[in-house]
Image (cartoon, rainbow, N blue to C red; front, side, top):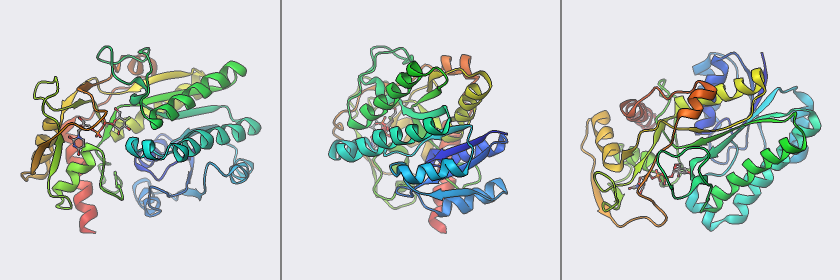
Length: 335
Ligand code: UFG
């Protein structure tokens, strides 16, 4: 079976992808600097998979370290998550974001090139599209990234395309995620932000556990059915499976692709809150406040290309996202 380097494998989406890769029979080496994750995730991955985890602590910016990793292991492909991911923070720290997200990735690609490893699955984002001209968003929609974070992702996407132009033996799977939500059914891994969350789902989760008093709903005057922002929430286990399908496409058919990982369905902030209330069995407090700068009305993806190319279909609905999130955060809080 193919051997995969999984950078950022202790993070939220990375850890779920690890589980799906192992379940599909891949041999996986995790590389993580634990800047936004906990080493204890590795123990929990061992419980879930029933097998020892091979993990290396280090940074994608450390070229000598990465070279040593590639000298020690013969990889068939890399699945790259290791990056900074907070849109607001990227506006405050554009240099740090460029350094980790773009320089880190190009450092990794340089070592891959020298080692003759030419396949990579890249974690991108639907925010590369910017404000949509049409919905659902197709992959050939114009890209108009607005934050440094979104620009970083597009720079990396373009770098992969340029590499392939320079040498056709490269192949890439660029996966543009919509809004990840939910947790693993084991409740052993999930999203675990250190600070006050920026994103809706982890914020609601902390209201449900009592760590935060109430949700602030950023605007109820959007052009959506209930006036609150609409997004395409996708279960993290579905997302993780999408990575395995992308990897398979590269390894078995050598076919590069750029696809949305989306459900094609939009839910509003109030839909999410109601569904979470049902999952946790409590009334969750909220207040309507002003719009958050940069937010837009509605945003959901066209999932048809991922279905046609990769056979990808998101199978887990909103109830499952809220239920698994609640199970994870309530268990984490009690431990
Ligand atoms: N929202 C609130 N209150 C909060 C947090 C969010 O009302 O405390 C609302 C937002 O206004 C928006 C919706 O919930 O309408 C979703 O907001 P998120 O911050 O959860 O998600 P975004 O769509 O803004 O962005 C996220 C990630 C990006 C990713 C993008 C993909 O932050 O990195 O989804 O669509 F690229």
